[in-house]
Length: 104
Figure (tube, one colour):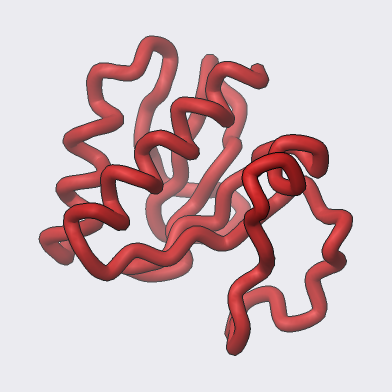
């Protein structure tokens, strides 16, 4: 497991109700909140995260260019791919996951 993915998982270990388990849908590692999957890793530097359309818009997030997994994802989707390549990116991803949990 890549170091940044592990850092993110470590940061999320203390979030109430969140567990990391194998994804029955996407394969690999997924994040569950109270038994329901709300995020999954595409690889060691990208998390596909379910927020809300409203929250994605209010945060000014947009679907990243060059998506391999969801190249035709609608701009109105409640899901957003979050890429992380540095410790600061990992912190930002953890903040977004906490926001997603707060929406549940």
